[in-house]
Length: 76
Image 1 (tube, rainbow, N blue to C red):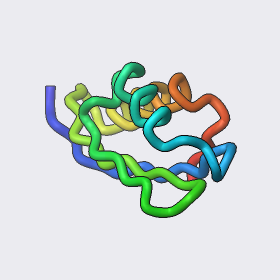
Image 2 (tube, rainbow, N blue to C red; image 1 turned 45 degrees about the horizontal axis):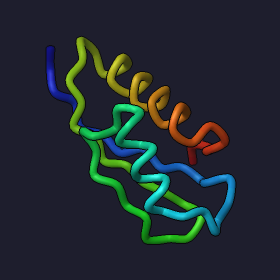
Image 3 (cartoon, helix red, strand yellow; image 1 turned 90 degrees about the vertical axis):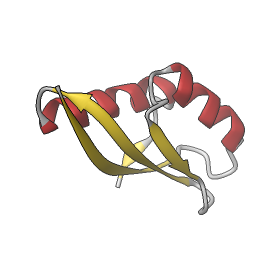
Image 4 (cartoon, rainbow, N blue to C red; image 1 turned 90 degrees about the horizontal axis):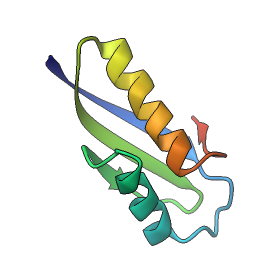
């Protein structure tokens, strides 16, 4: 497997959502291989270092994990 580094940005369903709850949910969903940025209300960015067989597999698995943690998040 190869290590892929990439950033994904999402709009959160609720701009007032508690960031700590989102971070905990992301870690539980498998996003513990990402640095999480919450600088703008209503937005979240994740910088991944994910091992996978292909770049496509790395990105799609990361999106799947994020959608498990925050189902209504929309990729931007």
